[in-house]
Length: 415
Image (cartoon, rainbow, N blue to C red):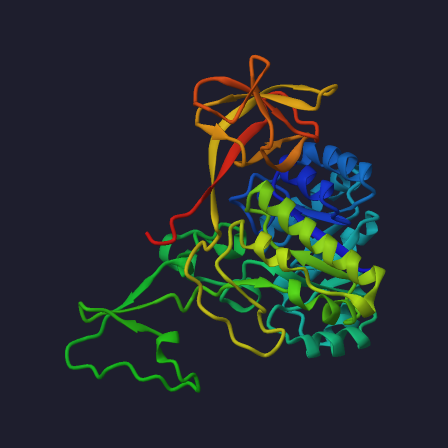
């Protein structure tokens, strides 16, 4: 059975993806992973991460996948005993020099996509070094993934959903060159996501597209001021929800969702959708169908538009920033939850009405999305309430005091 591996940027995200069916979680350690802008976890918190995951029977993989200089490599090695004693299952490594020490401490060694593994010969070498799994390069087609996996002596893992970097396996120097903030050390400021302007010296010829792409605007677009603009460096997000059968038959051991820097509701939604898809296929492969609502729900959270990466030998399309249907507005906080009547008392600082969709998030609660169908103020049913009051909302799932409350507001697509 394939493993569904989900991201956890903090304790709320951790609980959210586990509640929505993740078989395993991956997360970062302060200063040692590729998402320095996520909250991440400290060494002292790893035991708690392991304990929470254990409640769900899920495995835990710690990302230590930045490029390590000598100081960081020594520090990482000195932390292995503490990491192992926390109950964490394995490390995701971008440096093969740490495989032996990792395994000697009883931890699984998983090789990061940063290593750009593109053939079975590399996998055979990694096996000799003691690695249990390798995340295959994101530049591979699905046909290549299948071919490599068939020959591999160790488990393989692939990304199936989330942001894609324009650099080969994420190794990029652009952020460091412009801002002194290194992507290879997890501190990318994502200059590639900006709308770039191209200018030319006086007398230069117009831009010529030498590629086979007929639509020249795929490369650049002209503007009235004579300059050219492009999002060429910013690919769309990967989404493979419509290709679960092909993925399931690939022989890959683990499907990975990208998104440790994204919100808990993003992790909850995406994990839950792929959990349904995988379970549907495993239950009845011959009658498997893609549900229409899956794509609708995936587009409701942060995304840059979707494509299928290079799995079908199709180059990336450019992105147009966040294309989700809704934005998340902070509107309140949970005051109490009454288990007997399954209702939450909310203190709100924005208007609320029947039919509104809200998200409630907390460290123990995780992330819950709920459409309001019943509200009361001082025991009387109401259809709407104004900001500045407390309101009781019927919610079948337990939430907790001080949980955050957000309202999903439809974006103005005409703006």
